[in-house]
Length: 394
Image (cartoon, rainbow, N blue to C red; front, side):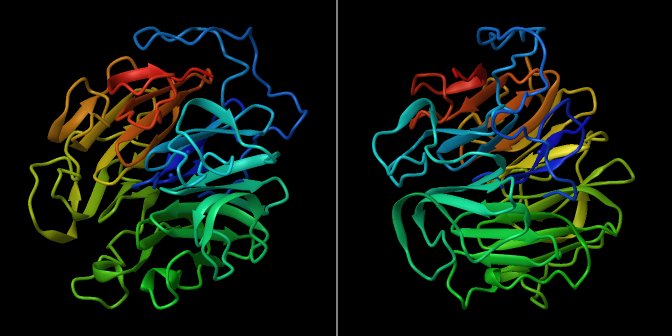
């Protein structure tokens, strides 16, 4: 069984019945995701069911439900069982894949994209890794790694990269990891430190991107980061090489990062102005690792701009940090939150957090979203804010 779990803006593998988890608009893998290729059976069983209510998740597998999900700033995308892609939400920059237009409040097929295996999406664009390990992107920005700014680009191949096994996007930056363990980044000016990855030459387990910095989780359990400000190698203070050598899972938000260690705890560093460490906010930048209180079981995590969610081994979810737009799904809006269980979520296999919304996918392939919905990014057919998990209407 292979599971795709979200790692701060993109996805990585853990254990799912038939999935192909990552910064998220805010906000890797050593194993290829087992997303079915077009025309292949999804491997799910049971009849397709109507969307579940937020309080009662159906006991039957939805064979038509998505197998991977990803959140951008104000749009959301999913890989379907036939390896096609659907997106919804803000479409001003063409991030839904149709060349731009009105926002989409329901999932909309991305034309010309087939055999997708993973997603990486940001504010104004979206990208997919295909079964042949190539990358296709669409939307607005320096998205093609060709030095040109593209406006409402329809899906097109990024010809400068190949053999891609992991992909991450956030802000204006996209980074890829190839079969030779090389990390390539594009989208920022060549002078930007975020464009110059420092992996130390070791084998990379997974890749994380957030705004103008990136981090890699190495196969030996260490973490290395690079980028602007505190994230640059050699900077003072430096967040680039935290004292970690036993990491199982890594996520990074806009100015912080958190790791689930082999000791069973979650440790964070960087900024804590919204309670990203699971404690009272403060204005400082922290090099020292802080243990998130009360979270001892987080084999999969997701991070947004200033919030974190942990998927526990029993499929329940706890979230903490910024909640100004209800992105934690706990039924209220607030400035900061301590680790809190999200009611109504169970059997969760994947999560993603955008700029102000979040989504979860259960092992029965039912997708629920919550938070801000001004652009229809929750996919429920409305623009109404949802403070608790609400089914996406495929």
